[in-house]
Image (cartoon, rainbow, N blue to C red; front, side):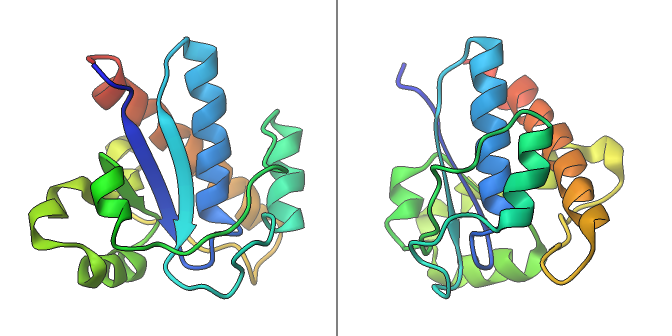
Length: 156
């Protein structure tokens, strides 16, 4: 069976989705599992840029390296290429639904659907906030990636 393909996305692909990308890669490696992982943004403002320096710094403190990642924009072909296309929040999910071919909507979900114990469905955008926002993103993403591995990848 081919390795699953997972795409995380947010608005600009410089904070939340590259964090999810880096966390998931590290957790897969630690678990001895394989999957293709990528991230994208619904908007193209930062295409080619590395993750926000604050995202990188907070991730690095927890052992995640985001430095090689570069922002790209979500495209319609992503819904063909990836098995799971996971949004950080409802606004970006709605934007992606407009881009997604009708026959591929089953691939589209919110990342935090994999962490129902948190009682939260959206990963808030930390861009205009304090350091605490970047730490909160990491907490949420780590829990959701654990849930994603447990529910989708362990049974493959």
